[in-house]
Image (cartoon, rainbow, N blue to C red; front, side):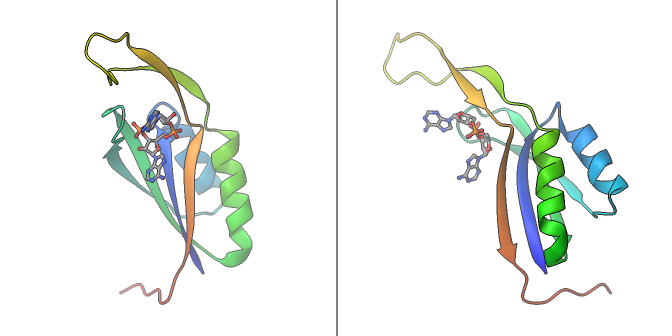
Length: 102
Ligand code: 2BA
């Protein structure tokens, strides 16, 4: 079994959650904030069997769009705001030592 963490744009989160659920993949959505832009995003946690990992990642990639967003971060005082490319999704896959439902 694996656990997938996926950081997803809030605008994509509803459709990604819906598509994962339709594919029989359980998911928990948590409200999160990106450390660079300090804007809200969504972190999905999904515990899946090994043979579901590629399906889950495929769905996340398919429904997560890459977007340009203006960053308030200024490398030096007075420098102009810069546009950064955000997403589609930042995905981590970790092994699960033990899983139980109580
Ligand atoms: P943020 O930290 O708000 O980052 C938003 C976007 O800003 C990033 O998009 C990237 O294009 C840019 N960015 C981030 N740090 C930067 C820096 N030090 N200098 C210049 N540009 C920078 P993504 O890479 O697509 O990341 C989207 C969101 O995914 C991030 O939001 C963060 O919440 C999460 N994330 C990305 N990489 C991560 C990692 N290695 N570990 C944990 N979370 C991560």
